[in-house]
Image (cartoon, rainbow, N blue to C red; front, side, top):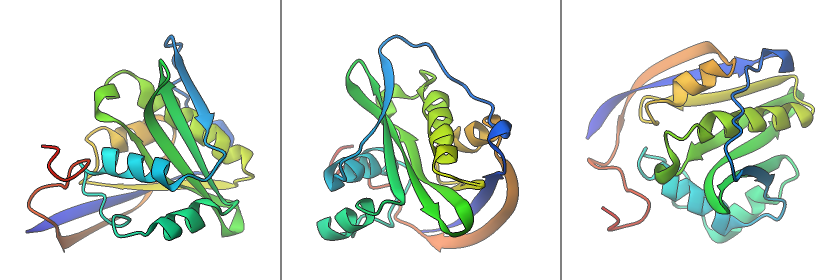
Length: 180
């Protein structure tokens, strides 16, 4: 089916613009996944993105995932609640000291527990630590209903908006075939 999609491009130009939303939630931790592991990133990509039409990487082979994640420019940070993975943020350093938040999301059972603001805040701090002079991210009308608001609440400012029509499946693929 064809739908109209709006994509919002946001940026942050100084570390001082971050408005953190750190929580003292018991048993919440964020750690970098220092070993490139396609299974981990693909798990998050499908388990989170399956509900939001994240389709671009579904056809990636294991080797393509490994090649992408093995680049020193890419970092994956994972939020854990009571030892269980709750969400992730994938950062990619780009030319001219830009760092993109390539992917960010919280697994459905953890939505609404203030983990997203915490993880995004930690991710932004890590992006600045990567030597960024500019952070940027894009989100769209197919993403979760709180995505744009969370980015703006953390200090990102809108710098571009695009609207276009695209053919998408009638139903989002979900975390794996037959999950719903």
